[in-house]
Structures are given as C-alpha cells and as structure tokens.
Length: 482
Image (cartoon, rainbow, N blue to C red):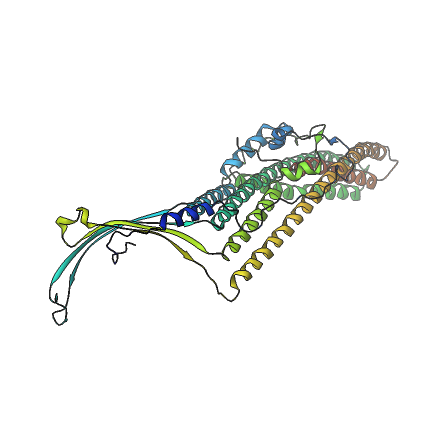
C-alpha cells in the first residue's frame, strides 16, 4: 500500500550500493541438494527366455506408441482412437495437466517484481473539542501512486520452488501418458473379450446343431425300436446342457460391448450394432520386439512420473533450507498527494521512497530445521516409491513375457485336442450306429469336443490379450508430442 505518512522525496545515499550488492548475490547457487536422478541397476537382458516370436530387438518407438495397429483390426484401432479423445478419465488427466501448468506459472511469478496501483480521496474533520488549532476544520486529501516490491532470491528459495513446480508438471504429464497406456490396453482387452465371447457362442451353436441332429437320430431309432429311452433322455439332457451355456455367453458379450461404449465416452449399448458382425479374434504378429530392461524403464510413464515426483521433492528440501537464511526485498513507492485537487499534478505534490529491507527469523524453536527433516523424509519416501515402481515394472514385463509364450504352448495343445476330440466323436457315432458301443461313449465324446473347442476359443483370446498386456508392460500406447 502507499505510505501516506512519508510525503517527502527521500534520498538514501547508500541505497544504490546496497541494491547492487543484493543483485550480485542473486547469482549465488541455490541452497539445498542439487538433484541427480537415481540410476537403477539393471541386467542387459530379460530373465525370461524369449520364445514364440519374442525378440530382444530394439523397439520402434512409433510402432510401440500405436501397437494396436500390429493387430490389423480397423475397428479396434478406431475404438482406441476414439477413447484417446473422448474418455472421461482422460479428460480429467488433461485437466490436471492444465491445472499443474497454471500452478507452475503462478510459482514462477514470484521471481518477478510486483506492482500495485492505488488512489484515494478522503475528507478529514477534527473535533471542535480538540485542542488542535485546526479543530472543526474539514480538509480533503488526494493521493495516488504505485507500490513496487521484489523479493531478491539470494539463497534460491524461489528458484527451488520453480524447480519443484517444473518437476510436478512433468510428473502430471507422465501420469497423463500413463492414463493413455492403460486406456488403450483396456479397450483392446475388452474388444478381444467381446470377440472371444462371439467365438465361444459360435462354438456352442455349432455343437448345439450337431447335438440336435443326434437327438433327432436317437428319437428316430427309439421310435423304430432300435434304441432305448435312456439313450433318448441322455441325448436330450446333453443338448439342454449345451443350450444352458448360451445365456452366460450372451451376457458376457453384452457386458464387454457396454464396457467398450463407456470407455469411448458413450452410453452403454451405443456399440451394439457396430459390434454385431462376427469378426475373428485379431491375431498377434509373428514377431514382437521387446528390447531390453533399460529401454522399458525409460519408456514407461509411471516410472517417469515417480522419478519426477522425487525430483520435485528434492527441490522442496531447498525451499525449506532457504528459510534458514535472511530474506531481502527491494521496496519502492512513487506517487502524488495533495490537499487541493488543483495542486494534485504539481511537481510539489510528488513523493517517492526506495530502499531495501531484510527479515530473518532467528528463533522459531527449531521449526525450520524440523521442516527440513520432514522434507528429507518425504524425499526418502519418494525414492523408495521410485525403486518400488522400477521393480514392479520389471516384474510386470517378466510375467507378461512368460504368460504370452506359455499360452501359445497351451493353445497348440488345445488345437491338437480338438482334432482328436472331433475324431473321437466321429468314431463313437459310427460305432454306436453299428451297435458296437453304447450311447454314453457318444455323450462323452461330444462333451469333450465342446470343452476343448470352448477352451481353444478362450485360449485364442488369451494369447492376444497377453500380447496386449505385454505391450502395456513395455510402456506402449502413448506418443511424445512433437
């Protein structure tokens, strides 16, 4: 505020020298630790043996950023693209980035001087009962001017605050990238789940058709006296048992469709027609480059976010440490004041003040040093969180590599089982027709065929889902803004 008590042009002979010294001191190094990013100890290769198309080749960043294109499914690609625009969680993350950017700008503003403008017109009347010679007289007072202030960042407290704000912004931006990674993977997983349910429904319907033919055959034989009622009832309950699986499969399919709609920012049911057409489960590429552990850690947004949070907290130690030292300010006021409006702009109405000020908290019962200890403890916590995030990321990739390869082995065995089960059904039906075996052999063969075919359908989906999990573990699904 304008200091109306001092209405004279003040001269401060040593002011310029003191100000010069203070300004020179702003070039000093900021107090507190200078941050160095931790370097985790990593092996040169993954511990899981790479097989079934996995290669330790360098990952193309652009390809990893849009990994879903390797599945060659335009509908899936379109759903992911829409999700990365319209998803509500993504919009929240984008808003957090804007908030952090604005907060950083507010912090950076502390590096610059402040300027306030003020003015007033007041009327003053002294009581007639006053002993003053001016008692009972009314007097107007006109005043206007500028107040300027600047905290000179001698010990770097403000610089450390800006450093922390920069790191906070980078951490939030990494969190936005992590949301993109998670959303792309979630959309793809639900899409594969929907296609898997469709595949399983087709398997069930094919078996129902075959079992209906069996029921018709058994009933015809029963009417002709060539079969007994037990065979007829067994054929019927086998058919109805297979039909009973349809509602659960249809419910699962609708749930996957509804989840996809919500992920893309639409109401449940919006994608029902778009996903009505039966399409095959996307097939993984023949080879998948997985790189090395170091590349993965640099790529994963959650690791970058944890590291940036640690960097921000390291800077806050400097902010707390700066409170141990004095604070310097340059203050200035310039304005006009007069008791007559006609004289307000005269040279004689001018006033100004300029000078430095210093404040230093010399006693606070150890509160500042305790705060420094608090900030150091928080930094230790963030360091442990970063180390934990690194280990969790490595574990996630190792597990993804393993399950992707092992599920392909399982799928291969299921394919052979389906071939054998189909042959067993054919043989059982022929032998039953020839009267060489009873109908229970046909029932067992049909049940086994349905079980193996359904298991193969699920395994086909699981292989692709495991590839999606691997891409997510490698940090795929976001691209750096150019």
